[in-house]
Image (cartoon, rainbow, N blue to C red; front, side):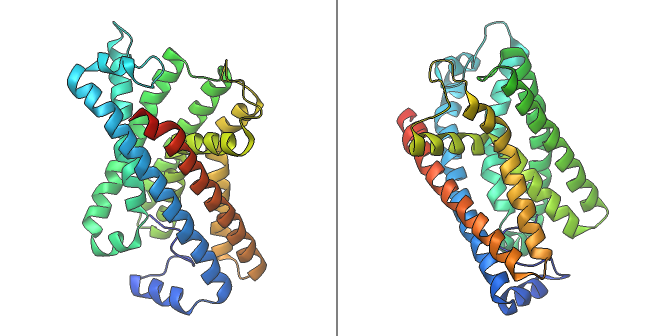
Length: 285
C-alpha cells in the first residue's frame, strides 16, 4: 500500500525510494512533510477510536452476548428475534477494530519494508474484512435504518460499492504485480473504508467550530448532515487524488497547492479527532 510518506511515485526498490526522498527538490519535500503530518494525526485519531470501540463493545458482547449491545451507543444495537441482524452488527463492530486499527499499519513504509510477510497477510485480511463488513453494513442500513433518512441509506450504500471497487482493483493489480497501481488503489480503499471514522470526526469538528449549524439535534437531520454523508468518502478521496497528481507532476505550484490542502486536512483531522475523543468517546467509557 502506498503511503503519504512517499513524495514521489514508487521506485523499483526501497533503496530507490529512500534516495528519491532524500534528494528531492523542496516542493517534493514539503509535499511529503504534509503527508507525514496528516498520517500522524489520522493514525492517532483512528487508534483512539479503536480503543473506544474495543473498550465499549467487546466487554458487552463477551459478558451478555448480543443483548449486551442493547445498552450501547449503537441505535438498535440488539433486536430480539433478528439473528441475522444481530450477527451482522456484532461482526460489524468486531471487524471495525481490525480495519480501523490495521489501516495505519499498512501505511507505514517501515513495516512494509522490514516485515513484508506481515504486510501481505494484514493486507489480505484488510481487503477481505473491508469487503465483508461492507455487506454486513448494507444489511443493517436497509433493515434497521440509519439517522438521516434515505440520504443516509444511499450514501452508506455508495460507500460500500466504493469499497468493493477499490478492493477489486487493489487485488487485481497485486496479482498482476503492478505494485505502483496496487498501492494507489489500496490507499483509496483505506480512505473509503475509513468513512465511518471520517464521518464522526467531521461531525464533531463542525460542532466544535460552528455549534452544529445545519443539523437538527432532535431529528439528527439537516443540510450539513446530508453534506457529511457524502463528504465522508468524497473529500478524503479527492484530497488523495490531488496528492497523487502532485506526486506525478513536475510543476512546483501544484505540489505546493496540494501540500496546503493536505495541511488544512491535517488540521481538520486533528481537531475533529480531539473533539470526537472528548465529546463522544471518552465520556462513554
